[in-house]
Length: 76
Image 1 (cartoon, rainbow, N blue to C red):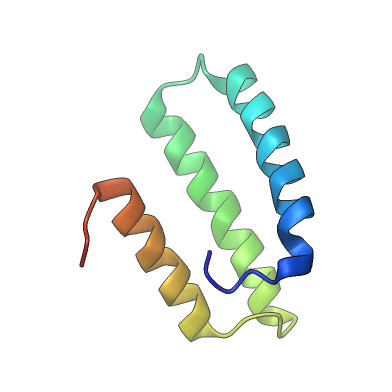
Image 2 (cartoon, rainbow, N blue to C red):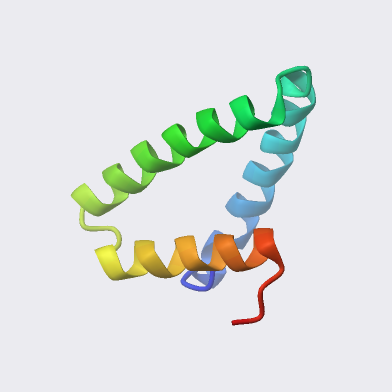
């Protein structure tokens, strides 16, 4: 996400590694079920960040737009 600070890079990389390991464990679930569960968790995490003033509603919208572009291959 474009609003990441330079000092968060190492933490983000470690988190990605952990999520990759978890994804291997969850691979037996149907992709749609996994996507729905991840969406629920993402909603909760973004809600906490917003509630604690860590990001604005506009930043959340921008992050979600980046996710859509990345998932769909859109350049727009």
